[in-house]
Amino acid sequence: MIDLLSGAGGPLQAWGGERLLVRPDLETGAWIVIAIHSTVLGPATGGTRMKTYPHLEAVVRDALRLSAGMTLKFAAPGLPFGGGKAVIAVPPDFPPTERPGLLRRYGEVIRELDGLFRTGPDVGTSPDDMDVIGAAAGPFVFCRTAEAGGAGDPGPYTALGVLAAIGAVCERVFGDASVLGRRIVVQGAGDVGGPVIRGLAAAGADVSFSEISDSLTRDYRAGLGVPFVDPDIALAAACDVLVPCALGGVLNSESIAGLRCAAVAGSANNQLAEDADGDRLRRRGILYAPDFVAGVGGAMAISGIEALGWTVEQAETEVAAYVRRTLHRVFDMAEAEDVSTHALTRRPGAWRRRICAAEGGGGLLRLAGYVAEVMVHLVPGVERDPAQRPLRRVEALVDHDPLPVGSEAGQHVGEHASGVGELTRHVGGVLLGVAVVLDPLFAPHQRR
View 1 (spheres, one colour):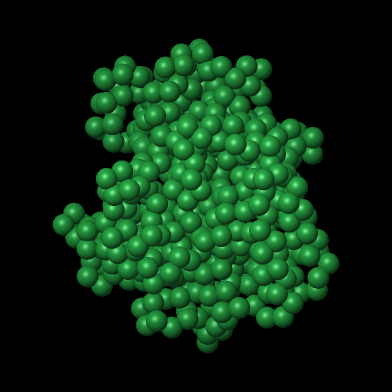
View 2 (cartoon, one colour; view 1 turned 180 degrees about the vertical axis):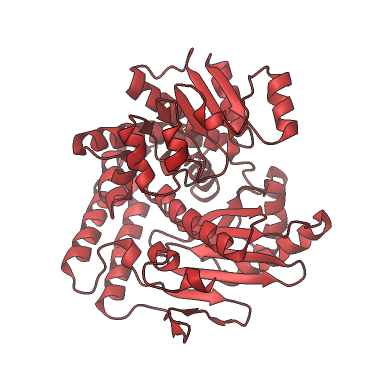
């Protein structure tokens, strides 16, 4: 853990986020980690992942990466939310009887943050869990069950966006958005992968799938007659489109070398193990749909329904249209600039200043993006890259004191950066926040 938090260029410093909370659950031996990456556009929002990890450093690394992805996921479509993520790391022998108590205590942590962080389901959690968490957390929980007044499972909305992404890559690579007869391999048949498999089969695709769960495998293999691919060889299966819908980090230097697909479009968060993998895909001629666009459906639809007053039909329309429109623009821009789609979308300010504007955002949103960018470049003391932003606060709530960062002697990170940089960041945040609120009045694709 000390290695993670210390040293220039380390994962925590490179993260560029605002606040990290690490708290043990003494009753169960679990760890609760909440990473607040950005609150510039609104409260940090992201799912709660619950699973076993080999050690605490792996938990923190996962939370950092996932929270940064959520910032992109909300910012690109111009939604008034920032990026965050929670990870609950449970022991290998965690008894199910302890689950409700752990979730309630986690909900109390969310309530303590008083709206700074809002959450919903992720890997290992469900709308039923959100009911338990929400009973303690209050109004800061999305995706409760319909009986509890929530919008329920976000998986089908995420799947809808993935299907739109598959159509977009097919149109780009093959000249036709139809998946009829296309060989498509879906990795994972869970909450998102399952609806994707059913949607592809209904559209006439030659779809196959991989899955580690025996029960899910039986459901799709025997129940729907969908061919099964062993998970160990799924990434190397010959296909037109590979659709990662399980855990992230599956595309790395080794697996990319063995890919036999023309395109990748899936919902798994952080599919690339490192940034260089975007260039590796490009050199192999494999089109990559950035995961924060292809997998935005659940976050976009649920926040729209529960926080912005969208109808279900409106949410479905917005998700499908946004994913198609944005991916086509990303593909055009990446080709014109001779860079990978991943590199294009990871440039500082690219998702705000260029992609959002290009996909149809109105004048105020574009203006705010440009103003914020100009301030970054012209005002002394303002960082040019989000990764250079000083971390506002790291908390290890074992002893309720700020966690030392830096040398072992302990160099504490302050609550705020000093001087003009922090003031400018606040002003830029206000401009962007106002733009997001008012932009629908000027954005044609959002008029009702």
